Length: 420
Image (cartoon, rainbow, N blue to C red; front, side, top):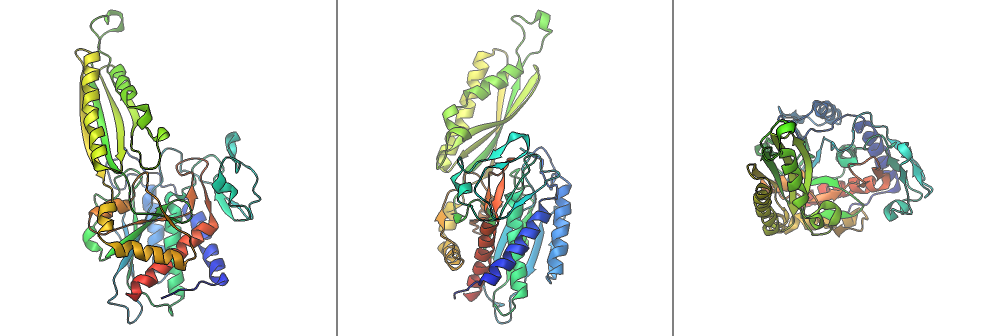
């Protein structure tokens, strides 16, 4: 079944997805990786409640907001398609905390002329340094003003899913099967799905919209571990410290510099894994260090986990009397093996991209998505591009035509799953 989009469709989709995106990014939904509750921040509730109301305004009657801020909505099948397989689409509510997500001021740049884009603080989006930006000449862009991130990760994904739902509601003549829409909190903290009510879903397959450049389709991600390194020293009055004091701050710093610089995020790409120290805090009595470990190969990740214990013993040897404890927690696993066991899920995605006129390519995710966790829970969940670039930074931008393309891929996917 081929679905043909008209130029009129493109204009309406562009207007809809842009207006939604500009509205959503103004919600302050930065998550807190130190938070112990789900959601970790109250602003995520505000966006979730707004989306619930918007879904109801679009005519969906089966819309729920759970006690932990998961939005789950169902678009019923058109007549005669009730027994078709259910397909789901997922995006996350929160934004990362590396850069402020408060008071976002999105800047719409129509018919981009290909020149440098000047932002606050002497920051520049320079097409001479960014071939992807240079390729957007003549297109409509949305970028930050330089004082915050933009929030395309993942409000572009939310806007694209919502626009696809609106399109199908406006075109009842296009048959489709049942659809589930899921919006989740705290994806950026790696804590988005532990409390997710998996039993409420009936989808046989799901797709996250949480990817980057036009045409990127992703079916594999890192194996991810989080380690907490706890250093215990022996504090002493500094005037009498010689030969007696063991400084836990120095212990934690020594541990951090043992992590191989050649195996860091800034030194690797493609399929190479890494260690990444994220935060260090404490005092001479006790200090801690948080480290992320990432690798596409499970054995490679476990090798790095084992190396942390070796580093700990080396630090203890440098600081007699001090102790180092390593606590490791798995965050998510590479979803490729489980998705490979369901080849139709990827084949449908490739067909949908073709129908949407998108030249696609498979790319590994140097990170993870809620899709990797949902895949572990038994629903294979590849990832689809959203058009966002420079995520988690004040240089973030998104191309509106790419957002339109993502919407069209979602619409085509829904119709393809309904045709089975």
